[in-house]
Amino acid sequence: MEPTDWANLLSVGHFLIVAVAVVAVPVIVTGLLLRQGWARNFWFRLVHLLFIAFVVGETTIGVECPLTIWERDLRLQGGARDLHDVDGQPCLARFAHRMTFLDNKTIEDMLPYYIAFAVLVVLTWVLAPPRWPLRTLFLDGSGKSRKISRVK
Image (tube, rainbow, N blue to C red; front, side, top):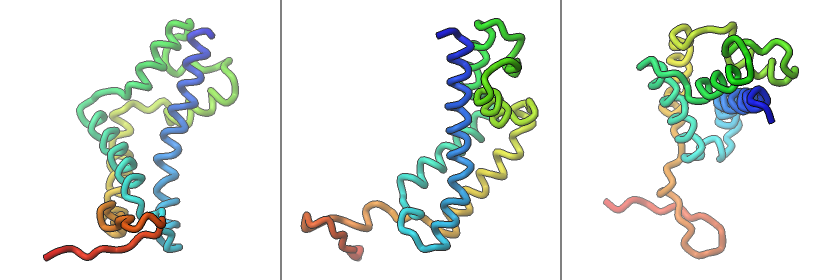
């Protein structure tokens, strides 16, 4: 495979990561409204929170996403003029790239959006906190969970 092919594959992967992070919020809220247990899954919610915290943190200090750097390097190796030179690439790669890098905005342009999104994710933690994993233990091996009360 050529560097441009790898860049296209990376672009689709990058887009999927961003899409999962964005779509997770309305999915979590819908799950909470429908009282679905998975919507309060601690590990899912923690990974989601840490992901957006990482994005906001790196953007705040002016560090570009490692996936963006990698894609740019691959595109340049493949003869592209810059990161956003995706004309002539397969439709899916162009779509993924353009959705990930909205209107070719810089990381500084995107920071307010990232912060607003992070605030939204934190609000879901505050208003509908996840279930802490140690509150439920499987004690009898039957697969049925049993709540335990805290020792005072």
